[in-house]
Every structure is written in structure tokens, then in C-alpha cells.
Image 1 (cartoon, rainbow, N blue to C red):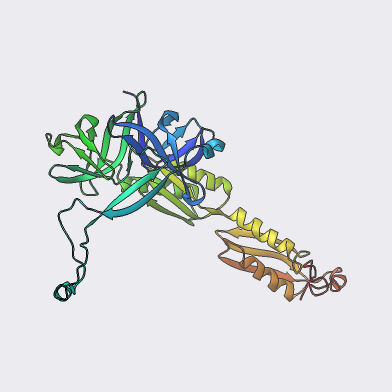
Image 2: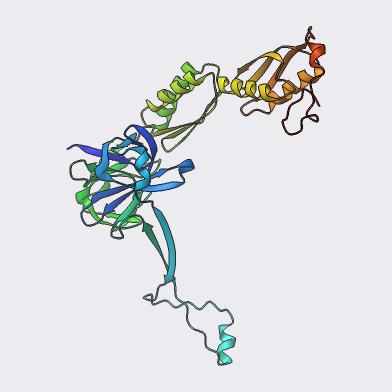
Length: 365
């Protein structure tokens, strides 16, 4: 059977272009058909959208690709969860919340009883008859909880769920439940049959995190032998921070990380020495104190080096201060030499900022 793996948390692409991350799956509880995928998109995952399962072209544990142009995502419904509570009027428990009720009873004053409350959750953007499942949804038998949903396997022809992959925590292997063993799917819980012992289900063992770390470190040591790269791993999502030598290294580090089995997605937040140099050069070029200074800028893991000759100590100090203010700079080695030349005395008479307050022009203050 040809199946889709709907790994909750996997990266989502739209015709090959990254457009979000899978967060939830909408399911028809009556037919066990996966109808919609809810993806997190936008800046910092600020928007949830509902995309039809019928538009999925490919789905592996690492990525899900939709046959949807990214620029048409705005045409799809947004998703939002709304929670509210209401009194549980069917409950036989009546709760008296007033501690002074005995004294008030003697006074002849009556107060209406209060009841336990029931919390409800509405899913805007998804049909009310669908159950919305996410990673961590509880899985139970008649005897109690046995684990939490990790991801779904779906028949790519019918969109019907074929298996649920259940996570039992760090100390026990997960297991795979055929859909035939699922008794009932509800909003916050999935019930499975108890006729079979859990040991009879197929085992699902996610790749050991130690093995993932080993492969990641090998790639980083090869591509960034000088260090400066920090990695954090959270449920298959790798975050890269620090400073790479250049954009090519940043690119190769992300590609190598994505090739590691067990990595679902990579958040590449690496800065680069080339970008840091560009920011410093740009800042020096627009500041009137340093715009005519003949100097060079270099960076190694954010440690910036200023080299060249300037007219006086004021310019030298200003250059160091400007460089230190730029994002990504962790330190400045100011090796600028004070060496006036034949142009220095004529440049001393350049207007100051006070002469042209609206333009920012001027050499010194």
C-alpha cells in the first residue's frame, strides 16, 4: 500500500518552496479519513491555514509537499481555536461555593446552587463534525492511557488513515496501531481496542537522539572546523545559531543537517562573517566621521578587525565604536594607524553636523 506519512511537526512546502509546518490533522471520526492539514505559516508561525489533504503530492517523515502555489495560500481558510466554558447542568454534583452558607441559612436567605463547568473548544476553519488531532493527543484503552499520538499514516489513494503511530515516552518503544483497532476518535483522546496486548503491536522506534547528534557533529566539524556553531534539537527540529564563515558554509550546514535521519526541519538562524563585514562597511560608509577613511574590515566568528590608516585619533575611535554597534559583532580589534597624508589638512575644514543639521553631513563633532 502506498502511504503518506503525516508527521506532525514536519516542514511543509508548496510546490517545493517552504511555506510552513504541519501542526494538526483534521479527521472524519466516522470514516477515519484525513480531510485537512492545518499548517503554521507566516512570520514566527503567526497564521494557521487549513489545506486539503487532496492537494498533497508527497509526504514523508521529513516533509510534506502540496500542489499549491505559495502565493495562493491567502485563498485558503484560516484556522483558530476558541475555548469557552458552560455549566454542566447534567451533573448530579451541586457545589456550594459560599463558606458562610450555614449562617445565611439561619437568616432565611437563599442562594442559587452552582454546578461544575464543562470546557468546550471550537475549531474555526474546520467543519464542526471533524476531530482535530495533534502530536500529543492522548491514546487510551478501557484500562487507561497507553501513550500519545506521534504521527499518522494515510492511504494516498483514499486519504483514509491506515495506522496511528503511538509514542510511549523515553523509556518505552512506541507502537503502530492499525486503524481497524481504533474504537473511537474524539477531540482530545483516541480509544483503541484492548483485545490485543500492547506487545502484539508492531514496534515503532524513532531514531536515537544520540545517533542524530553524532551525525550532526560530524557534519559541523567538517564544514565549520573553527567552531562557532550552536545546535539545539527539539522533537526533530534543529535550530542552528552562531556565526559561519560565509553564506556558502551556512548553506552547506543546513543541507547537511537536513540529510540526517531523524531531522524533521532546520531553523537556520546562522549569521556569517561576510554579512557582518558588509554591515560594518556599510555603517562606516554612511557615518560622516568615517566615510572618507581608507580602511579595510575583516571578521572571524564575529571578531572584527579594522586595518588601515586614518587622519587622527578621533576618526580611529569613531570607527571602532561604529563597528562595535553592528549586529553580530562580538569584539573589535582596532588596528588603525594614525597617519595624516597630503589630503588631511584640506579635509579638516569639512562642515560639521551642526553646519548641516538636516543632512547629517559633517566630518566631526
